[in-house]
Image (cartoon, rainbow, N blue to C red; front, side, top):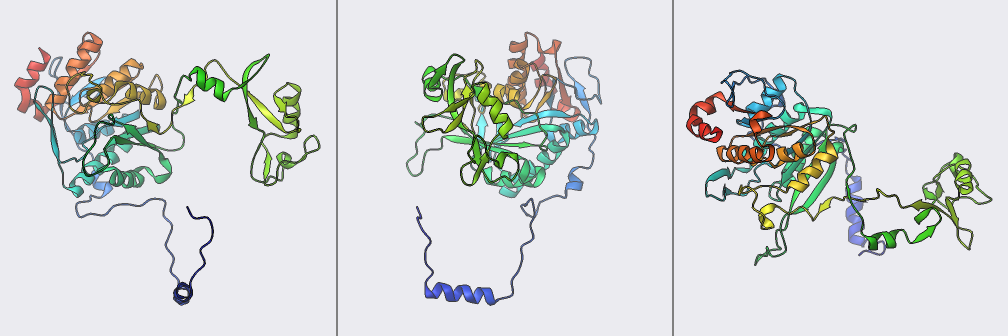
Amino acid sequence: MATGVIQSTDSEKSISAMLKSKQPYFIPRYENVSLNYISKNLESEILKPIDNTYIVLNNSREETCKILNNDIVFSDNLFAIHSLINYNQKVDLIYLDPPYNTGFDFFSKDNNHAYSDSFDLSEYIEFMRIRLILLREVLSDNGSIYVHIGHQMLPYLKVVMDEIFGISNCRNIITRKKCSSKNYTKNQFPNLNDFILFYSKNNNFIWNPQGTVPSEDWIKKEYPKIDDKGQYKLVPIHAPGIRNGETGKEWKGMLPPKGKHWQYTPEKLDEMDKNGEIYWSKTGNPRRKVYLTPDKKIPLGDYWHDFRDAHHQSIKITGYPTEKNLSMLEMIVRSSSNSDSVVLDPFCGSGTTLIAAKNEQRQFIGIDQSLNAIKHCIQRLEVAQSNIFNQARLLCDKDVYEYFSIDIESILR
């Protein structure tokens, strides 16, 4: 670690002088940056309306129907998201677990092909960029989007999402421990984590903080003192920065420490002291008492180590190869949606997001173009809801239906 200022050598000083003598140039300040590649489409072209026809499979085969809440759509999500835009349908939360571009094909437990995960780099970036632009249009003004991705494409998608949603709307890059430490390799560090890019539409987004119930040991350590009001901890009553207003003035014959200000006005501090909320040390140092509340939780950070995937915990839910942790999805749903919200998963796979939304009393829309995924999703939701078709519809792109009609009929039986 550097501990001081390194003195410039004569050579470095001469180079510095030479550079300063040249005509200066200025880099314009932009909020966002973007990736450039040959296949990149204009956003105006991406947003041009596309009409699509859907058939309701679990009812009379009605055509040209609108996608509704609690629908599962068997379609390329490019067309399905356009359909949502065409009807001006909005959702408060989008979670997607898209292909990671690992270069592999994925198969379910019964050895049926689930999907291919191999793209050229620019092809993958544009595949995702098109869909993210469309998803931005579906997202409500107070909505959020979570993109679950591996290390391979993380830096590229971060730049793409900065371009589409704005750098200032990046809330977190969440690191999730996906498997245990046994996943070692010979020539590199073990690949134990994947990542979630969490963005909001703007600064006014739904946010319900989540946390874990603290242990007794944690409580004793963090709230070591007790009085007749309960257990409490001590925190400073000053904060960094100089203020010229009331919080910078003298209180009880003392000024805030140098370079700091009171967190409250002197009048408020008098009131707190009168109510017994200020603790005075033997040396006359005032601090505020913060009491333990019955609903106290430890805030969840941006490293999630308790949400490993089912197949990394010997828990086979459906056998779908990339099935995500249900508890994690339920937590995301609680965090970024309300009871009247709609949750969209455009790569819904085996339906974990849809189950999470239902468990948290939200409505959902699921989309996938893999027949294997749709089968797992329907079977899983039927078990969860006794009869999915009493509460939801299965929609299919008309062209897809005509191609897969026999297999789809087998799903419904």
